[in-house]
Length: 317
Image (cartoon, rainbow, N blue to C red):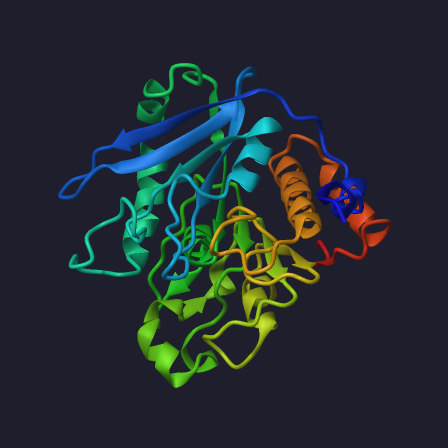
């Protein structure tokens, strides 16, 4: 079966046409006491008041090296349809990250949060290094999205707390959690509770409007609870308004890191296309650019594209 046939079902989920983009890499932000933070910026070649999405990569398996250069299927799709996408190479990356002997290694969860804050603090400096984009970004319309460990980073910025400590950033208007870690502590195996004490998040304070995305076959090794562990932020977080579950895929959601990436355990172009289209619709509606985009996308997923996944939403009050 050809790739075009595989994605036919996902094409029922409506989206806008792709437009020309420009990309800058590496953009460098000097940070005190360490090497510069490197970024990739991909944005529409034309237009003004462009909404911003900061995309936080995962930690990845030992044979995969996530960085600013990954997740092209998502980053390019969003940028071609109106968003300026900023991708950092986090401290935890094994290519361009902090040295393995640095305090906080290897996951650098706290540094990852601070790197996103640095991006928010220094948007004018980022624009200076991207002349074709300078003056065209909407600094008041910012979303964050994160995959796997990136979902943990984003959860904190959206309001989740760790042992009472707050990391919430009010400059962020919306979030997307892509197969993010669920509750830690007693919900993990004893070994993983000791290895990942920073997973012990309290999602009750996650207040920023957010979409949680899970793979129905994503069976995490951290916990005996199974795939539903990744939906904890939706069930516990008052700001987590919708849960998108994709059928037939696991942690890589069919290829969001790239269909040929080491992290993609199942190549599923149909699920990948659905993920791209549903997340774009969420961003367009929650940031106020198209009030109907999310409703139309959900209707398609409940109708002709129902074999790809399902949506659960909290009733609005």
